[in-house]
Amino acid sequence: LELNASDARSKKALTEALGDVTGSQVLRFEPAHPSDSKSNSNSNHKYKYKPPPPKRRCIIMDEVDGMGAGDRSGMAELLQMIKHSKVPIICICNDRSSQKVRSLAQYCLDLKFRRPTKTIIAKRAVEIGRMEGMRVEPNAAEAVAESCGNDIRQVLNCLQMWSCKKNDVGVGASTMTYKDLKDRQMEINKDEVLRVNIFDACKIIVEGCRGLAGADNKAVTGSLIKRTDAFFVDYMLMGLNVHQNYLKVSQGQFNDAKKKGDSDLEVRSLEQMHDATLAMSDFGVCEEQLRGGDQNWALLPLCSVLAVKVGHHAGGPNGGFLPGYPEFAGWLGKNSSRGKKMRLLQELRHHMNYRVSADAPELRMTYIPIIRQQFESLLFDKEGAKVKESIDLMDEYGLDRDDVFENLDEFLLASAKDVNRFGDLNSNVKAAVTRVYNQTAHTSQALVAEQGAGKGGRRKGGAASSVDIVEGGELDVVDDDKVAAVPDDDEGEDEDDLEELKSLFKKKGGKRNSAASKNGSGGGGGGKRAKK
Image (cartoon, rainbow, N blue to C red):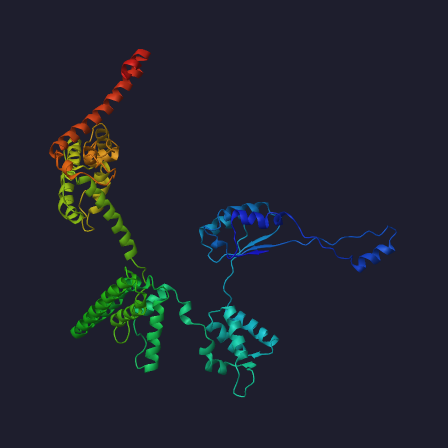
């Protein structure tokens, strides 16, 4: 029995399909062997039929590393079946390093298979050709296996295509020689770019037209097509990888020119670097149109040509050299850090809008450096940390403890080395700040919203409650004369709201004191008085 990625392999499907199979065997109804009947006839005992041994089943689970979210609880059910099964279960995977396979490998015999070499494939191809009426030379079979990347299935396809091809006489080609193979190799060859990974493809692009000195137009055109096809190995990330590595090629050429002491060659290297940067900028503009709101995917071939143009300018007329292994795109990690810091900046802006009226860039460049200096002078004071003054400054700008100890350190420049970080404060100072901070009522708007003191609207009734609805019964229609008669008391309500917030905090403190007095009295009367 075989289950692959095209089958449903959830817990329910495995239970229904393999629930009885793992604990049963197959009966065989076959006659007894003639030798057994002959030996039993010569004996004195009565002949008894001896049934043949039962056949055993085998379960093959192909591509177990592909059991994803659609196969709910399938891996757990498979592990339970392996523990209690009386039938051998063979699990096949492509990615041995997958987390699912790691948990499965603890209950299996781990056997790793490598891709066969071209010598082994060539011997098998010669044998298969002989069985099909073809004569294949061993060196030709090795050349086919090497051109196909040691892919057995592709080798068989090549043999079949060769046998179907008619020769000059009109008869099927039943012989494969090494000379004939070189003449027709491009017809049956596997595409080379399919065996290239993303890093090798990036290296092909950024090194430019390397190795084409003195080549004819056909070789130059083939190199251009090869580099263009390398872009489509992974066009989602290839532009970022080219952006990460193309300057290394230009820098190597500039260093070589500098060692030679040729000023003209240095200027030429800088001009090539400038042209490569302009081409990279053009690629960014084109890709923005491709991935933006319009999503004009017809520009994808143009993006591939622009990426090849970057490598052409970076490598120069004779091609360049990329030292070491190509690096993965560092923009992804930088963009993640940028998103995190933008989120923290928006939180600080939300907390400080009680006192500060500024957008995010102005807050980052103008307010945060000064506020950080103030907290640094208070908490890192030589005579000891000034806890009370620090908390007063936090309340003045609507900041909480996490904003000071964690978020402000995120907005330091990388060049700031001799700066005190709040995360490195003494634990005693942090504990003192936390203790005093929790004992104080903070009435800033941002902190009150977070602590849940005021969740209602600003006005109890609002403008709609102060205005009568028109007598037609329509909720959306309001009498304009009555709206004009409503007094504008926004100026007086600000002070009333602040006093109301302070009273809410006082009520919370009063409830805590009443609860403490109730526990201390120990009698029912105290509880009644507190309740009253």
